[in-house]
Image (cartoon, rainbow, N blue to C red; front, side, top):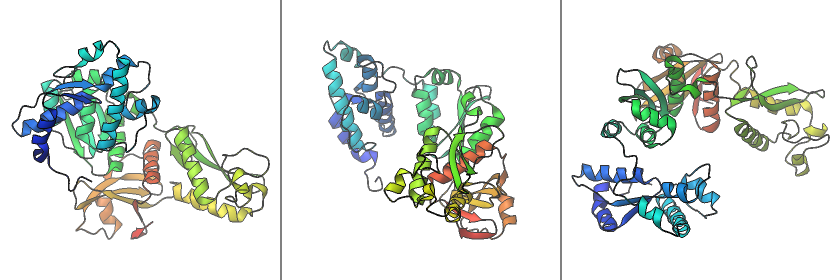
Length: 401
């Protein structure tokens, strides 16, 4: 969408014309205004205008909402929105929200107080300098105190944007980070999967003071199997205990149920045997001819179990020997994540001009990493979300799974 879009310098003059003598209204105005000022600064122009933030106005005029993000607050207020996360759609949604806020501010006192040359909670110059030196790339970032101590580790598909969110957030944790941070370093990964795995390992190793939540296990529920009295393989979602070995894991019950519903529909599994439909007779999908009758023993258990076993083998880490190929840090590079006998061994990067034709070479480029249940969950979850991910079997390099 942006490939043929104009560069900022090509529209800068028009922006000045449009905003001259006007008040800039935006949802989280401090962010949009700072972006404009930064871009104009690069062109040698000092851009200034009055601003008004619909986030701050909404918090004062319609308090009590759990979230004031544009999507959630418009849904909560019944404001019809289309084309979300596109410039025109978000701008239209902001206009509709602002119109409602104007109507609610009968005294107009709050709006008068909210208009200012700079939104409150401006970034300190040192924080602005930190952000300007960061790239808009995928990777892991490290926030340091003045003495070099790491106080927070995170990952993002856009490091610059994510750190900017930390520095503009008004949450208690973000404010503490803003007071203590002296520098931010980063490592490009290209691959979001590598970033997730590296973030998990680095947090466990460094134990930063502001990463307490991420130190805990990042999944709660798992997919389990058992055979019933009639010989049918059943699948079920349940909480994961310490010594249990689920087929795959999920961050919460909602994502587990969503996965199970999709799996049941795509593979024509029985709702009764996947725990989605409690009944002593046939499941609902059998009624609408989307279940082949395992629930009432109409489909033979061996035929049904063959389909279920294929699913278990696909999503299980047990005995898995594979290499996951993902994006690299540069265009001509790829990342490789190595799994041997169900154990995550580590990751590495290789140039596209250099073909990996044996696993001795592959193992030599891999940076060893710790295998644990969190890394297993990260990999399985990522593979579920990215179904087109390239996977090579260990005994047959170059073959896609």
